[in-house]
Structures are given as C-alpha cells and as structure tokens.
Length: 220
Image 1 (cartoon, rainbow, N blue to C red):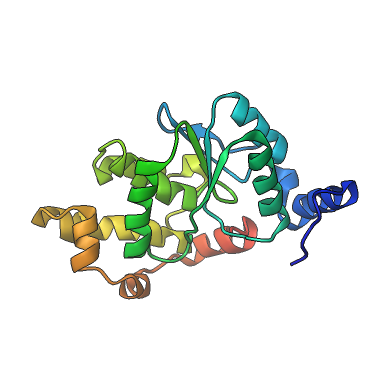
Image 2 (cartoon, rainbow, N blue to C red):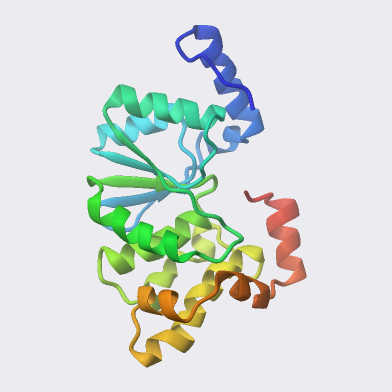
C-alpha cells in the first residue's frame, strides 16, 4: 500500500484519487449512513476530509476509526484532517466477520469511558462494525440492556444478520440465551464461558445472504 506525502499538492491529490476509487469513496460523497444514536454519539461510514470538517463544526471532539487501515489513503487523510482541526482520532480495530474477543469488549468499555464527547465512530459502510460498537456503546455508556441495544444491528443501517456478518448478532444472542439468565453481565459471561473461535465455528450463515454481503455489497 503506497504512502502519500500530504504536504505536497500532488501527494494529497494522489491520496484523494486512491481513496475515491480503491476505497469506493465516490459512493460516500452524498450517502453517509449517518445516525445519531444518542445526544453525544453519531455512527457513520468512512468520512471524507470535508465531511470530518463539517462534523467538527457541529462540535465533534473525537473520531473513532474502527477499520484499522493504517497507511492507507483514507487513514492518512483522516489522520491529517483530525490533526489540523484539533479533533482526537482514536483507532479501535474490530472485525465484521469474527466474534468479538474479550479484549475488544473490555477495550470498548474503556474507550467509551475515557473519550471526549460528542464523538463519531465509523467503519467503511457504517453497517456492521459500527453496529457492533453501537450496541456496546449503548450498553456500557448509556446502560441499555443488550436486547434493546441490539436494534443497532438492523437493515436500517445496512446490516444483514443472515450473512457472515451475523456472527456479531450471534454473540449477543448467545449471551442473552446463556449468560443473562444466570445473572452474568456481558463482560462476566465473556470472561467465564465464552470462546470466540467456537462461537464463530457454530454460527451458520445463509447462502443467499453471503452472496448479497460478499459479492453484491462487497462489504469489508
């Protein structure tokens, strides 16, 4: 993956072109999949620099990148834009087709306790990883029960639970089935009776949903 010299006009232009086509950012110029999920948190897809600028003008103090992508054009542009605007950039990488790990669940709780608000969190499309973290945000930060917070994993946001991305839903479903009835918190159950590899192996996606998510939508 090439590094871009954003101090040069040519380097910045090259990064924007790369982001536009390699990362399909042309689809996100007008469609942001942006939703305020509380008075202090908005979830969205990967923002353009000009969109980060707009969010900063609306008071956003922290941007949470859930994708990783270090060294890519989109991440370099995002980091540069946040630095120029005085917005804190937090990198907290999660996956859309893997069961959450204990470290990720604990890390999410810590993240939501320490960042400055209002905040914005994003993955690429704003559907799956943003959905996972929205559930954890509402549960840990706002005290919502998991069964209510799971509304963040819905078609309204572009999430398809019948595909491979449904392993996220399956994690929460298994907690509600096996952990909550025993009086265990989400973290307690994740610590004591949960194996992400076994849970992922037990999950079964439907073929038509895999075609939709993997081949048509081409989700990251």
